Length: 470
Ligand SMILES: CC(C)(COP(=O)(O)OP(=O)(O)OC[C@H]1O[C@@H](n2cnc3c(N)ncnc32)[C@H](O)[C@@H]1OP(=O)(O)O)[C@@H](O)C(=O)NCCC(=O)NCCS
Image (cartoon, rainbow, N blue to C red; front, side):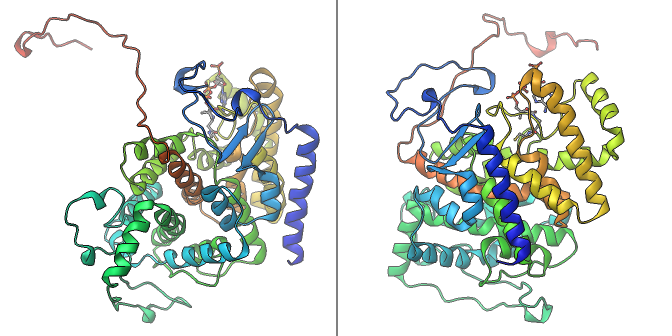
């Protein structure tokens, strides 16, 4: 570990120390009971606030204490000690991997980073003109294999004809990014026996989860490059998940420090209880649709500005404020107009989001390196103080994960439009893990609405209906 990377770890350690002094790690008894005896009683608010939809051992958010747990491990410990590969394994399988297991898992992710056919298909679309999240969703659907746990029920599937959509290859720039390295050679189809095993693996689903976890970074990085008028870069097999993602996006290998910061970001965003995008993924999976469609739904839900899309809006807001001296005036006007302040507030957290506790010092550290980002950080810092001293006191509104993540990405030279796709690149671990967990005791999600409409209206033929004047 070099000096810069050690400094990053030190910053996190200090933030964690402070967090542990200020918060307690007591679980909430009402939300951490071991087993539920369905049906249960709970008080439900609009937007399903307070509703308990299932049991889970994947993760727990203690909103009143500001505490986040992945399968029993504190997010603080994981961000100091772990990697995204290890954390995604933990979320999927419920325990930390052994050395051998981690190697096998990493090898599979490395293999699944290569998405020749998905890339070829995606590049047939005007990606450069599309919203990056729309392109990511499209690419994710193209990842869908011809065989999934849905299709295998179709009679007489010709297994020899069934190949993963990426069993072929396309021209992608290969090391060290020269067009002359374009590759076209198709690979041989696998024999019948291997294909049968493959189908089973795909049906069980964990292999598909690995494909998605490995594939989303490749798609997101390609989108970023295409939007910059460049060709996608082939994945680098000897780089870590985080380093390879940065490499595929930027075309140069990241420094050790950049790799570590991206890794920490990916760890922090990997899972977060029954948030809207996770729930959207689970709802789709509960119909026994397949996991590619589920993750596509997750991406769609994450895109919204009340959810993952907030990180891009935070940066736009800070840039619009423009100077630390303008914070108070801007805030006063925003309150008068009853505007939501992006990057603040949370359905569950009524205290400081633990992820923001880590990202804030990282943002401060990175932003100190150039005057433009230093100023943006100063604006953010000042706005946080103003909001916390007003809304924090009145309504328990504090910075959430999206408040500082954008500043971190910005300081790393990542364009704003990629912030939300990066969130998806990480959250795919939580989405897939929770879908797989839910499917073990699946029941289709099907709430009801209170009907507040009329009854007994008499049908009028169109010729007798009056145009309303506006
Ligand atoms: C995250 C969020 C959607 C949670 O929504 P929610 O649980 O439905 O909470 P509500 O929108 O009902 O907010 C409760 C109260 O706090 C206020 N509030 C919540 N977030 C606020 C914000 N960011 N700025 C100003 N006021 C806010 C609401 O106006 C509401 O006030 P009221 O009771 O006087 O009407 C919401 O806090 C928000 O819109 N935040 C900004 C977007 C954001 O950062 N999203 C990323 C979340 S990780």
